[in-house]
Length: 334
Image (cartoon, rainbow, N blue to C red; front, side, top):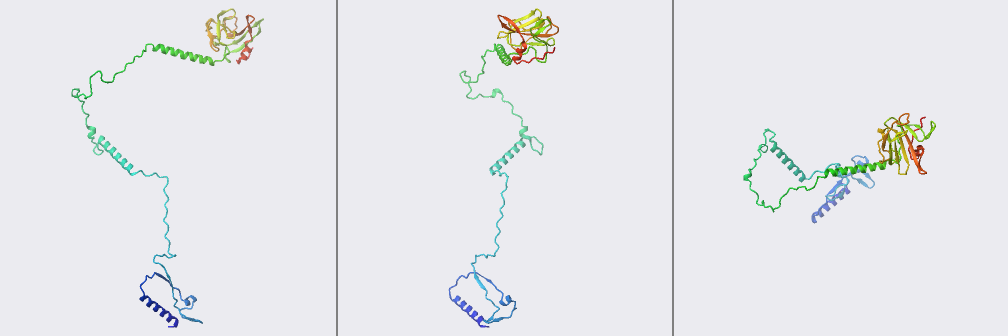
């Protein structure tokens, strides 16, 4: 054995002897990491290698690293972190235990009631509750009145009410109310009517003669040809000042407006006059029917407009007046 090996062995024995003499101590755990020999690292095999410093042994001391017993090596695999489960979404929260128990009790009670009334589902026999007859009514003689029931007239009791309303004039009151409503409706309709209207509706007649000379005399109005019986309307509001026969016109109607002017309607038959003297009319009211009485060559309405002048009435052309009031006339046909 060479000197280096001998010295190493003596040092180890000396150290062991000192440890035996001294008090025992806790030796921490150690981990030895062996290293390959120099010959192996140099690729020279197992023989010893010599150099200028002396022979080199194949045995190389290992390095001792003192570690506490609970210390974990760095190269030990780390525990993988626990996987985090995502929380469920769009899920209804479960009902509390008390609610579930109450629901179960109600279901059991409902099922028991149904079975008691309809009978068992297995034997198709009616339930005793369903088959039990209703109790017979108790005779009146066996009924004992309650202690607080009294026949005293002064005691409180329910008394039937009797109506003292007088309904004898109900029919008359209804008639008055109905008439009042009709009057109000008529007044409202009159307010909506225009102040001036055409005696015959546009499209129903043909204008055959104008306010102008005709056949050697002056024609003082306009002629509106229409079928017999066509309704004639009052051109303005006013009061009927004449209604009946007239020379040359068969039968006529004269209506005096609030401004003092008069409108005249001619050639009606006696049955075609629907108003009487002194009657009040509103523009648009039907006052007569188209006829062909008097000096007439066919059924038509002769319409005139009179205005007061110099103490007497003067005829004027009704066409410009109607146009000024917004009434459109048919075109002259001949």
